[in-house]
Image 1 (cartoon, rainbow, N blue to C red):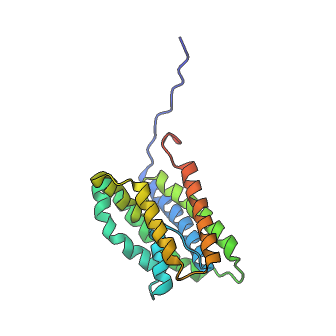
Image 2 (image 1 turned 90 degrees about the vertical axis):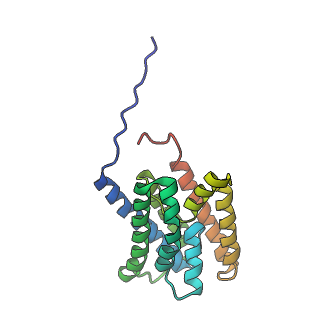
Image 3 (image 1 turned 180 degrees about the vertical axis):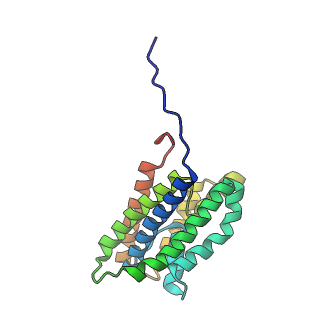
Length: 205
């Protein structure tokens, strides 16, 4: 009889573990966002829209990011349930808060925009993984894409790509083409980090 390797039983995260992970994940995401903001860079999805608004209006990134996400929580309840929605609301609120707090306590006299953009995306990608592993997200466009996929069959990836393309095209009016290229490279790095570390079967819990 062949030996059967038994998989360890899945142990769910406790509420304390979830809370600590959401704080740590949002600290990393917000720090990466701060680096990109100071470098004058951009990114995609809901965060990219918030960047654009912060560049052309009096609203800060944190305020714009929080407000943009408000209409999507109803969809999150319908698509993902209350637990996911509450965690996501907390994560969005913390990112908005931390992006206000970081500049109050950290100042960079010299900041290379290329390095800051690429490193900022690395830190942001790691923060996303922490949030995903504890069944939270940063809401917005991702929730809308999943909802439309369920309702009308529109592939979530195609909608996400279309919105990201619109963000990139709109950013041509607010940043230089050099910074745009660096921002695209940073976004590719961020998505590679997520693709390598967040997929079915990668972890047991």
